Image 1: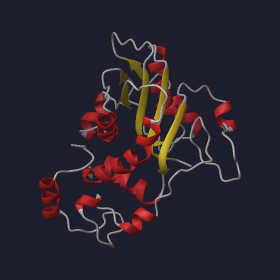
Image 2: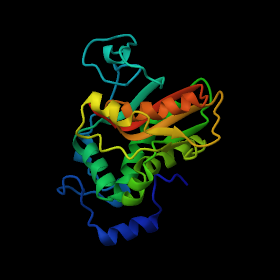
Image 3: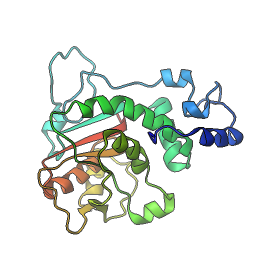
Length: 247
């Protein structure tokens, strides 16, 4: 069974706790099976479509007809081959992520994973070589104890199951309890996560191709830090996927 879809008993339990109302706008009908996000809110999602930077996934509003790399990426040392995200980090999708992550609104997980599977699966399955695992961006142990879950892991589990590849929590650890990235500039974000991650003891990844998964991609500093560790451990290629991308 795909873990992105809840069994009927779970939907029944949620139905006893929550009315069938969209938990974003609180104005239209939405059931547990719909992830408590109504059709109007779903229509407000701004999916990221080409043209976009082939390296960081930044969408470009213009008449670009060929693959390109944005000027920002050309100035950075990036350890991932490419980064893609489902939609722009605004409106209903960002509200769902924030409630999911900061308010324990776990009922949004099916909605978010549905969107991730819809967009990521075709692209990842079309790759010319097999993937060896999905690496959710790890939380520092202190932060994980406070939150009681890692949102990236909960989003990565259904994708790993659908691709029939392992979820790799055993490769990278967060060794520095960095402050929140949400209010920091690009330079501050990069500094904030500099050497925040390290490989776990004994990890060797020669010739492996890995997917790093996070909930939101903003400047890429966090996922780039994870990708650096994986490449230093021998990974042949690292790509990044996120549910939402800051624009």
